[in-house]
Length: 279
Image 1 (cartoon, rainbow, N blue to C red):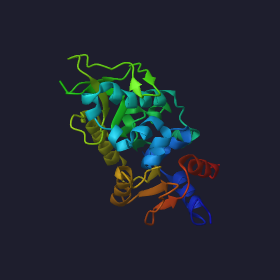
Image 2: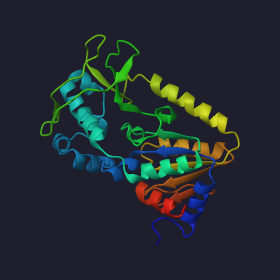
Image 3: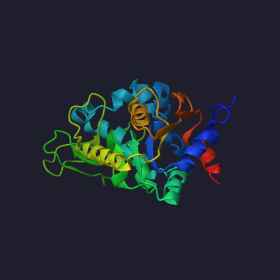
Image 4: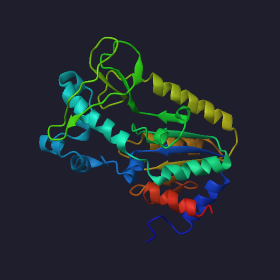
């Protein structure tokens, strides 16, 4: 069996990329796996990445909860401080550069929609004003309360004990000196400030309105069905815009109805295969 999909699909997808007038890049957690970021799919994947939480019997859903910042800020910031440090240290994989080269070669308009909070697209050189981070970003902070609608860049240095997963520093709100938290939509969230994301949504809509009847290629990578936000976004774009076609790159769940194309491979492999056919 051809793991990338049915015979001819990769060639069809490559032709779409070559003929595109503009791009919408949609990405879920699978986009980061090729950069060495942990796969949180299922408790076993999460516990493999974070053994201390396995010993406590805590799932990703239970750790990614704003209640921890209220009850025990060192625990809350242990998880998110570690992730902050991890994302700062991570080098985006070559697939980011491949997409960027397609865009630059054509001088094509583009927009990125991602459920990832890691800031890897910006780190790879994609413009911040062409970004929709649907769950927010770990690189921005807000007050836990919140005492105001203000958010600010996360320049904090947060050492984390890798045995206890407790933070050695608790970032504070500059306005009220209360505990701060990442400007991320967590599970069971009650205090996330969504204004930054809402402004990004407005810019995306303006971008789509400006494209008219241009050929839009939606390149979706690593977006699963467990939290289907990104898949639903790709499909909505694919069906609502007559000139839009979705290329779904997903090693486990590549299914999508024609005329859209599903490639059963990882993000980096799929992008490399597509790029090889552009030459």
